[in-house]
Image 1 (cartoon, rainbow, N blue to C red):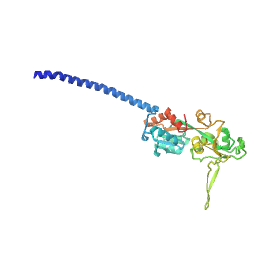
Image 2: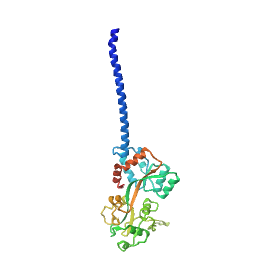
Image 3: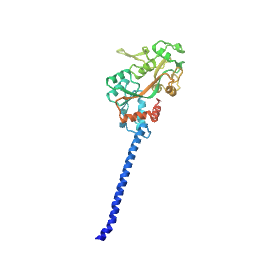
Image 4: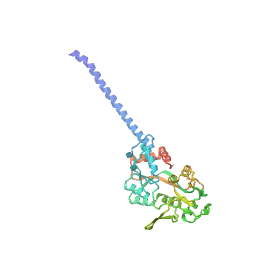
Amino acid sequence: MKKVISAIFPILLMVIASVICAGIYLFFTNKFSFGSKVQNNAEASQNMTAGDNSIILSENELPRIGTSIFTQSLAKEIIKDYTQNPNVSEEALSCFELEEGYQKLLNGEIDVLLTTEPSEEALSLAQLSGTEFETQLIAKEGFVFYVNKNNPVNSLKVSQVQQIYTGEFTNWSQVNGNSTDIIPFQRVDESDVQRQMKSVVMKSLSLMNPPMENFNDKVYGRINDVIAMYDNSENAIGYGLYNESNILYNFEEDVDNGVKILKINDVEPNYDSIKNGSYPFVTSYYLVKLKNNSSETIDIFKDTLLSDRGKQIIKEAGYIDN
């Protein structure tokens, strides 16, 4: 019996020693492995915040995004890039008129809004709701004027644009053009373009009454007067945001009776002139959220949009990055 115990005892000691060593190894391995995981998670979070191009999110990981009609294409490109999915769902592109968008933001129906700067009315609504808007400039766009390609006028001064739209200048000869009446087309009062026309171009000046047209019915006669749409006649002038206008009229296309974009103060609206501010009429777009609404999702979205990745998305969508 003693011989058996003597034979087993060294083996038993070796087993116990092995178990202890294995335990020590596992303890320290897991400890450092856990530390490494924490570090990796922190790095991943940092990368997301920095706008790492490798980060891919699903639509439900993005904040609820609201847009105006003029930032909808920007939002679409942002979502496509973030999700790496070329098919953006309609639910991901909630588009509102300016005041409606700010109201949705205040109601908590959306998390962020891509739009123009809040109006005095929107700021008052926020104050009444006991909160404030936090705005971050993300992109710019030119506010442009266009005429028929055959119009000899190629450039207008800021003051001349204002004098045309107050009704002080009524003939193209007053701005070095042909001796023919100016027809200054406008947009409907509720539109974002018209708001930009008033705030960016006209400032405190009042717009003249716009050209009107009526609809007629054989039975009931004239039904209603509406603001006339730009018709590109040789004495017409119209306006809009550069992206929208170029889609409608394709300024680059060389066609008879086409539409040409005007220089303002002899400065052509393009990427460089809008970015550096030498072009005088610039519309700015902001990422807006409620000051008291903060979350990791919103922060990642905002920080990525301000990163090099976000700026590239903005440029590819046809806007001027900030």
